Structures are given as C-alpha cells and as structure tokens.
Image 1: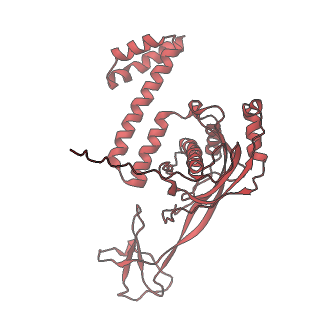
Image 2 (image 1 turned 45 degrees about the vertical axis):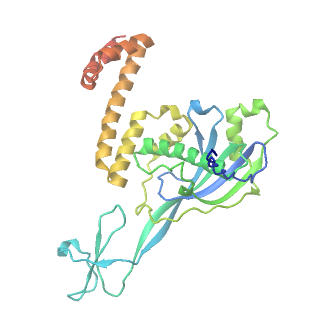
Length: 330
C-alpha cells in the first residue's frame, strides 16, 4: 500500500540583507501619532534594564509638530440639542439651519450649525522622533523592531514621570512606525574596552554623523492624533530624563496604573482598567513589604515564609504599619 505523501511546509521567506556587516550607529526617523510634553532641545539618553545587557544604549530626539485635520464627512443629527450646547456665531444664523454632529473615534461629539461652510478644520499634534542606536544587524526588520523597543522604553519613562497615558508601540506590528528614512555610520573598529565604556558610547551616539542612507519604508497613515498640546512641566521632563537612563527605578505598579488609565481613557475598557488598578495596588503593597523586610535583615527563606503566613491581600495591608514602625525604630 502506498504511503500518503507528507505535505511540505511552506518555506519561510528570508528578509534580504540591506546593511553591511559590522557594528553601526543607526539613525531612524519616524512619526509618532501623539504629542509628547518634552521639548526637543537635546537628545535624551536611553538604557534598557540590566537584564537586557549593559551596552543597550540609544538616544531619542523629539520634535513636536502641529498640523491640521480636515473633517469633511458629517451627518445631520436628529438628536435634540439644547441651544446652550450649540456653538454660537458672530452673525445671526437663520432658523432651520441643519445641525451637524461631528465626532472622532474615542471623543465626545461636537455640534455645529451649517451656514457658509460644510467642513471643519481642527488642529492636531504629533511628534517627529529620531532614534540613534548601536546594532550589528544587516536586516531592516530587525532594526525597526529594535528602534521600537528603545522608543517604548523612553515612553515608559515619560508615562511614569508625567502620568500621560500616551500609547506604547506594538513591537509585533512594524506598521506602527511610519519610517521616513534610515541613516548609519560604520563603527567596526571600536575595541572591546571602548564598547564597555558607557560614557564613551553615549558620546558617540551624540557626536557621530550618520551619512550612509538606507532604504526608506512607509507605514500606514492615521488620523488618531492628539487634538490638544501637552503642557511642558519641568519636573516631569527632568524625571523622564532620569528614568530613561535609570530604568530600574520605574516601579511596576506605576506602569500598571498608567496602563489602566490608558485602557479607560483611550480604549474605554473600564473593566480591564479596574482590574489593573487592583493589581497595581497589590503590587505596591508587595513591593513595600519586601523592601521593609530586606531592611530588617530578613533572608529569602524568611521573606517567603512571611508571605506564606500572610497570603491574603487584606492581611498584607494590615502588616505595613507594623513593619514601618520596626524599620523606623531600627
């Protein structure tokens, strides 16, 4: 009896190599669809958390941009709108003028009275971003993912410092980035000692001029911009700069709180937001208890035993005051 033929697996298409081999400083420029309340005076140094390696360095340069969004598609509203809710006009608008209800995704509707115009021009704000990083990659896709990883690390620092729930980029979706161009500069002659010198590597990222131009890539267009500029608050900016270079100081519970705000504010997913806030509350209690126990000279086994004895959240919460008093007495 003839055996059935096994189906051959489709061959994966390998991405072509578009950059030369060797260590390079890359400069990647792209648009981010939201406004970031940090002035683009100088590049901000970024370092990944220690588990990713000590030489995971990059810089981010920002340019805040203002443009306009034309809303020319609207429908007549049959809703009953009070006169106070409607916009007023310098000139008297005749009675019976149609009312338009216009809304963008995720925003409250705006009501307009049609007169001599049928379109609305609204201001919108976004950010042009330039990421500079070290990489040995020869493929464009790997470079895009690495740029997204660094920019997300910067966004985590900014979100934690400011409380602004700007969305992170999806590292599995390359089209999140609207790449304008790539540039690079070869750095293959750096010694091992130089590569381990973080200060020298940061200075290179700031000073080296990238002249070689790589292939351009265009991502998708979006109308999901910020409709109002973010305020510049100096303490938030300084904290963003600090957390970008010392990512270990970003508390996990703070990240959860910002994500909960983002879920509610941008996605209207209030149920998941509440779950995340509860998780953040428990994470904050855990972090405080562990910190106090370490300060009181508890070893790992004793800390594990403590949490076995205080397994319920309410039980953990009641122990904080006692641990704080012990720590202050010590």
